[in-house]
Every structure is written in structure tokens, then in C-alpha cells.
Image (cartoon, rainbow, N blue to C red):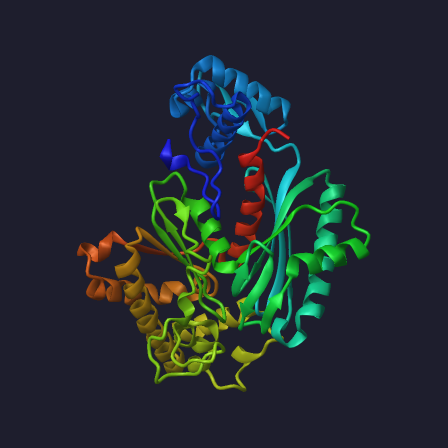
Length: 426
């Protein structure tokens, strides 16, 4: 059942049924909790199925599965009902499916240019979303956290009115974070250093009169985006994946054998600061020629248009500016076409290096790449074919994200919901 693993940031939820050990000393409650989580994870990753199919997939005896499903129904986490069929004859079978009973997870992203608050139900469906444009670096941490707390409070109030209960909140930021203390260590893209964001949000939410706060965690935006992207393909056989964010900065989330790679100190994936060409542009980190100065959002806008061009106007929605950039490219505008060609070359150059080191089966391009990436893909794939050492470019597929700029917030909500899979029984 390995293809149904729950993948998180270091503490994966149970993915396999847990038999008692040979000595019989394993705690029975722990075994049952593991098996409950395994059934939930199977339904999340593989969709509704019969109890007989659950037994076959988990290797558990059918009576045990019947008991586990009954307990999950009692907890309000799953429901049983007839299979949805069209044009079939005969009595429909009974399927077990995720329910959630109003549980949800919150993901909050503080990006360079917006704050995004999102909530997902246990089955992954979106139940709340609000994004507000904001010049985060110019505003500074206090003002940004004030606004973020207000939007979180609005979200919590809306969820309460809808009868939903958040089990956790994960905050995403573009930089190096200390997850244990929920502190932003260094985020040059937004100008933050040593900001204890979880404590700051808790105090603001309490002052705002929010009666009950869910647990608040912090993680890097690219890692959370990778978690969300992997959730899209989990169960498809993909076990090794690279997710690349495309915003002002460039970051990566690396999935290795179904687990998110964090590194010794949690800093794995800071690929935006690979110095690919030290003779090129200065970077916010203080060095020159970092990859994100070559392929980040600012790079393509700078290459495509002069500073007075509407493409650089922050008062125009980013999606609208990207649509304008796309129209220019499709119309054959020389500056735009040249900019796309340069970025595609540099993007392929960096991805080829990463493919040689990591050998991913899948590369997902997110953020702004979602909107114009199809104009880059042919050149990027050519670069991988000619530069990657492994045969057939390591069989590496490159595709565009379906989540766009919402990936990090989605990943935060998924991570918050992992608490339910890790411990289904209160």
C-alpha cells in the first residue's frame, strides 16, 4: 500500500495497517489508531471504495475493517452510501468515503505581493478562500501581521457560521524558517529577519477576541507548495518530484520516495540562490547571478518591458499583467518573445542541473509559470534532453501546476489536516 502514503514535512501519517509485533507487546490503542489513519489515508489518496476493497488494499481482516469503518463513521470522519452509477443495472454497492464532519485545515500564505487565506475540508475541497494584494516588504512585519490576523479572524468567523471546525493553521512564507519556534529566520524577498510570526498572530487574534485558536505552524512556501502538488498526483505512482515556485523569488520543494525532503536543518530547496552566472544581476540576498534573478517574475517582466510599461504597475492585478504578457507573446512582440526565450533557456539550465542531482520523475512549474509556462515548455524540455546525463533525460516529465499562486496555501491546509490522519481518535 506504499502508493497511498500520507506525505508531510517529516512526520508522515500512518500509511499501512499495523500488525502487533511478535511479542504482542505493542500498545493496542496505538495499533488501532495507526489502522484508522491507514483507512483514512487510503480513502483520501485513492477515493471511495468498498470495505472489501479496503481490506484487500490494507491487508487487514474484513471484520477488522468493518470495525474500523464503524468507528470512523461514529467519529464523523467517513460515511457509507451507495456507489454513484449511471446506466448500471442491479443493486449498487456500498462505498466508504471521506466525510469530515465539518473539520477543515487552514493555509495562510504571506507572499511578496499578497496575503492568501484558504481553508480545505478533510476531502480536500475548498471551503473558504480570500486573497488581498499587498506590498509586503514595503509595509513591514507589524502591518502585514495586523492585516493577516484580521483576515484569519474573518475566516474563522465564516467557518464557525458554516458549522466548521479548524484543526490547525499553517503559515507559508518565502524564506528560511525555524519551524520548531515558528520564526521566520531570513526572508530577503519580504525583508523579514527573526520574526516570531506564530506568537505575533496568536497575540493579535486574542486581542481581536477570537475565542478558540487552532494550533499555528510555520513552513517555507515552496515546501508547502510541493506538498499540495504531490497531493495532486499521490497514488499515480510518482514517488520523486520537484515542485518549483515561480514568483519574485524561486524556491523548490523536493519529494524523495514519497517524502518531502527537508535537509539537516530544514533548508533544502533554496534553489533560487544557486549562483548560475555571477556576472549577471544583483540579488536581494547580496550576491550576483542567483537563479531567481534570471527566471523569477521580476526577471521576465524586466526583460519584456521598460519600467514605465503597465506590466510593472502593481495596481494592476498580477494575473491581468500576465495575461497581457501572454497576448504580446502570441502577437509576436519582439521584446516579449526574446524575454520568454531567455527565461526558458535559463529555466532549462537550472532544471537540468537539478535533474542531474535529484533525478525526479516529475517537475511541476507553479506560480507565474502556470499562466505562461506553456510558452516555455518546449525550450525547457529541449534543454533537459540535451543537458541531463541520465538516458531520456531521466524520464523526467515537466508539467504546469493546476494550483498556480494558491499552491502554498493549499499545502498549508493539507499539512494542518494531517493532524486528523495522524490521530483520528481525539
